[in-house]
Every structure is written in structure tokens, then in C-alpha cells.
Image (cartoon, rainbow, N blue to C red; front, side, top):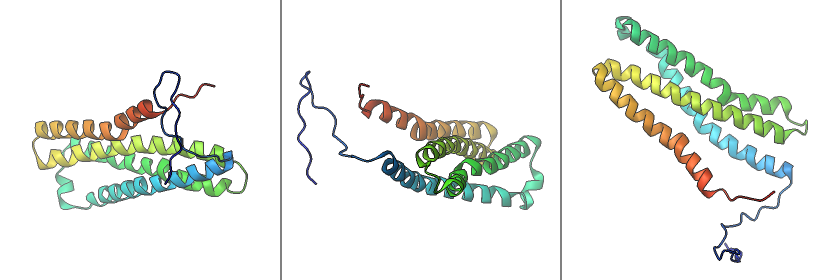
Length: 175
């Protein structure tokens, strides 16, 4: 794939690579919608599997032995997991209900906001579920330390790194 030659900026530094896209707002919305659907497939699968596991846990014999704290964690995780399905599956419903109305750019923006919300909620569900499982499998102090470590790890990969990449690599365009 040939790259266009880049001319130095007045400061002598080369600008970032050009994306070469010349697309209408509708074409951009179509591309962004396709990208969003691919991202949603991963997140939807994650929330569905996690919620499924949480929903069957209540029918296990060990569940009756849970203390108040663990039951509260369970209820929180199940409720949050169920609520998380809303913003992660909602973009599909939104698209279906507004298809053909020539408002795809607006629908993509709203679906993107729903997806971001769903990802935050999914992270919280993962953390609550992990804390519950680790409290059952280990002692409370170790469970808290391990959950804190995983929380930091997930926050770094899902939120901090993308924010850094966005800030570091986004070219500034004068308007």
C-alpha cells in the first residue's frame, strides 16, 4: 500500500500519517456504525456470559450459605449485569427503530454514548463479581487486594490507555 509523501511542517517535524479518507457524513456514519457493531459484539458476549453465570449461581447449594455481605455483592452484581445489557444491546434496537430515517450520524453518536456507558457498567460488574467469587474462594483481605489489582488493570486497559492514546495520537486540526 503506497503512502503519500508528507511534507515537513514549518517547525521541520513531519505531521502524522494522513488517513486518506474523503467520505460524506453518511459514509462516515456507515463506517463508524460498522466499527461500533464489531465492538459491541465483544462487549455483548462478555455481558451475556457473565450475567448467565451470575443468574445460575443462585441455584447452587453453596448460595444458601452466603452471608449478608456476599448476598449484597451478588444482588449488586446481578442487578448491575442486567442493567449493563441495556446500553450494550440498546444500540441494536436504536438502529432498527430509526433505520431509513436519514439520521444515522445522530444514531451513531447516541449508540456510541450508550456503548461507553455500557463498558463502564461492565467493568463495575466484573469487579463486583470478582470480589464476590474471591471472597468465597479466599480470605477477605486477599480478595480485596486481588480485586483492587484487577480493578486497576481493567481501568488501565479499558480507560486510561485509550485516553492516553487518544490524547497522544490525535492530531490537532485548527478550526
